[in-house]
Image (cartoon, rainbow, N blue to C red; front, side, top):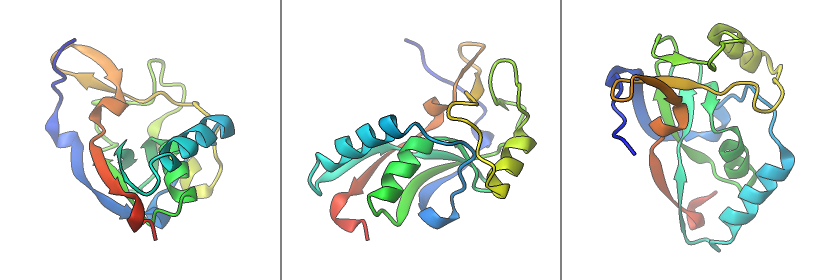
Length: 150
């Protein structure tokens, strides 16, 4: 285990955002989303702890968290936890090979042309490990009240 250090300027904000503003760029795996929904429902309107959805700060296109987004939306949450990122930063890439470039991902999302599930595996550069790490490590934990969905 090691401490994750990164260029803090890539995080542009952490907040609850209206679910209707968020734009997916990938399809989801229904079975995975259904399991997540059942897990969240098991809290019976108690507070839940969930990782924020990572989005581009300019376009609100999802970078990581499509299944969390879909599950929260389907469960009726109107405000969802989001970490806004500077997607233009060279400290973020779409995967190790960068088969799809970032502006294409944003264009696909805005146009509603969803890529297949797990088409991207976004990474960020860790100053401490000197490696590219999974971008979910930049996600923040949020406590959501189940009774405040609608």
